[in-house]
Image (cartoon, one colour):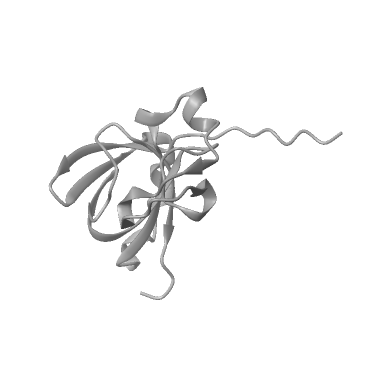
Length: 125
């Protein structure tokens, strides 16, 4: 039998949120991974929805997606609900500045303290 479990390493944290602007702190051991990132204007940020991470929410497979006025249950994978088996958030942001191990971005919809899982450049910049 193949072991399909995995380990996620958090590479940083949302350090500060001020309105639509956020500062992401990348941990020192991952700073070298930022090399070349300044060539991109838009990034995909994957982060952990830490405030809603509990067994009951992870077991939720059907939700009423209230964001768009829906009233009927749908499968969680057809929604943006934070209640899901793996509470991972994904947002496209505008990269404004990189200073050492800190990124200033616009448009991140994560809270202060949210762990960062990964950063990927949007290729069509």
